[in-house]
Image 1 (tube, rainbow, N blue to C red):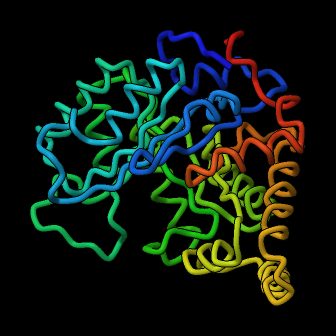
Image 2 (image 1 turned 180 degrees about the vertical axis):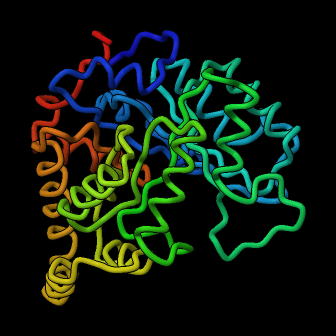
Length: 300
């Protein structure tokens, strides 16, 4: 399916015109092979580009894979959301990078600290995601939609959900216009998180981020990064592994999560962390007739 190149849109502009449809989007890893043909068949509402920051990154942002791939995706007609972990970069470097992204046509920034809460950097320009969000708003006003991360299982650095909501609220007040969540094991965990956000008067759109479970290690990965897990689901995944059925169980459970989220009237969007398994993502979405739910980008 060929897409017509055009100006990138802010995600909030797309969401305002969703009606009863949903965003169905894909994460793209620019450090791995990308099959643009399969990605075009999936026809995602937008593509998010991950960014693995490192202190030795090139001083020329044009040479970094996330920017190279963002430019190429826009050239091919995809709406782009680029992740930017700010911890290793100076304010001057970041301003120049954001100017370059603006020139490329990027309108959506996933602003994050990066590096994990345990990483300590002396004289860091952006010690927290909040600092980076404030910087983007101060330097660029409303040029970009700013997405911030949501943690239904609580961020590793937070002591409780109340503290989690306090810091999330600060990011919203500073200029974040959307939330994209960390992956969970169950749909109910996503729904509970949305309800908690509402209780704390956090009323910006929430996009549910989810992992394609391809093996038992994917369940272990979620278990490791979450403060609490959905025990019954994990036990079933363990049982499937003992019967050499991990792959099928993971695929079926991924479909179950996506279907439940898409059938929820309040769901804005489902964002799939594909790990560049685009063929698998395409097949799963076809099996659940995802196009019946997905917004038609040509009409936006």
